[in-house]
Amino acid sequence: MLTETKEIIKVGIADLKFAKSPEVLRTSGLGSCVGVVVYDLTMKIAGMSHVMLPNSSLSKRSDLNQLKYADTALPILIEHLLKEGARKYALKAKIAGGAQMFSFSSSNDMLRVGKRNEEAVKMMLEQYRIPLVSEDVGGSSGRTIEFSLDTGMLNIRTVNSGEKQI
Image (cartoon, rainbow, N blue to C red; front, top):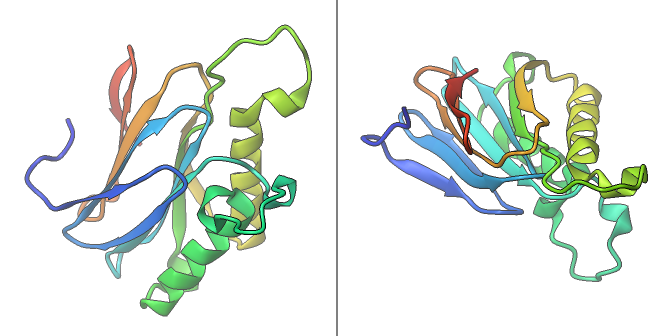
């Protein structure tokens, strides 16, 4: 069940936000996008990113939205958490999303955005040596996720599949 009594900080698409206990982070509309939560549970601080695409190098725009891409959003997320008092050795991550929302007859991996997002996020977490403690990725349904700093649990509501916590 989604928490209704605490202050909820909403994270938009191609956005990231931070919270301190007892606040709750929530993002909706995760299809092929990946929701990434990085947190220091002892310090009760967390950040959530709603990653739309894996790699900013594919963008041709001069006014790049760094929060849109895994390779640019995660460094911002992690650096800000450390600046706010999180301890690098205590950081952990949970992810959800990365669905394949449309079926294609082609085997072209460029069309499999959800899988590429998932792989890019995992690569960035490995690069920063942040353990991925749980995940709910893949499938073909959209998700809404909500992270509670009080419990360290990521509540996942999946379209037509109900809710679970990881």
